[in-house]
Length: 185
Image (cartoon, rainbow, N blue to C red; front, side, top):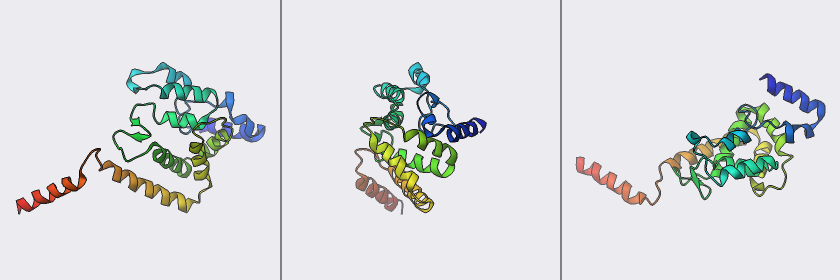
């Protein structure tokens, strides 16, 4: 809590340009939303994390070049649980939806960290995933009523994606379940 307070004081005293480049402490799990792995942690490629390429290298280079939208996009995919922008375990759930849900959660429940992150992300440059930062700034402009409504919508969407299996004939599966219940009667 104290480091966040000191960062905020320095940010106010020195202006918003202070909050980027050398002062952005990647890996500060409490202060840097979405970018919680430092460059050195990503480079260490700890086997238990299961980091995959090209996402890990993309994450590192994006951080080094202050391309925060690209870094966020890579961060959500560098653990190998996604393919073509969707999660392998939940193929109906996109990386973009996961980022939006997390952004809404951070905005609602980690307000100080969210405000700091927005000042940092405002200084992003040359992003190829500029839509990710546009999403962040859109979430930042939403009313609290809309945030809670969108959080509920995304949560319901995720719950629905949990029950969809790839290449599943859901109608046939449901009919088989109904038939088995009828046989028990």
